[in-house]
Image (cartoon, rainbow, N blue to C red; front, side, top):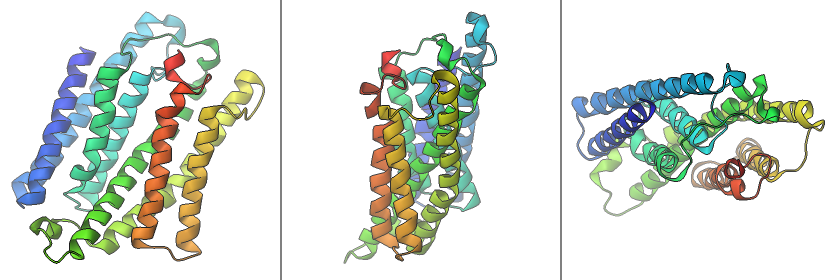
Length: 281
């Protein structure tokens, strides 16, 4: 049942992406409302698949009851995709950015497809160090922040496309479907500004968990190090914007560097980290 729901959500997300892309080229209320409704349904189905996975995990591993099954790469990627899509839906509805799906959903779909095709989908019990209430808090906080950053990247990407088209001698018609550069730039900043304190708390939670599990707050594990690097990049983003007045393309490019660090922290570090690497489990 879990994988039936998971694959159904993947289909619905793909349909939402198609609807958003069609809206980019042909404006219409039906397309605008339709792709958002399909995305909302996909999120509900995806959430149901996660609930079924959690119930199966609790039934299979009685000692891990009340812990969430996000200790595998499949579970982590699935939650990341769900979070990114939920944030995308909220932004699309709240700010009427009806083309946002074109710039965000490809990345969340890639995460979900990677979970389905390249990661071990089976359940695995928690090692003793992970049998802590922190597993229900710390990873979720971090991955929720990453889901927000997927959307911040998507909005910056929309900014670059819009800027490129407006400076073109023959801009495409879809340029009028994308919000103004000012709106996109401000929205990216607001997401990062609100996300960074939460990410800071999430990293600190990881340190407290490490203290409980191994008796040290920070061990310079590869995952810890790259999480810190990612955090510092977004600190630099805010500093350059608030203190140096960086806006527009310059700020978007710094955001791209930060998102590249997020990708390496989430994916590449799995080949380096012994404590945090899903692939070593």
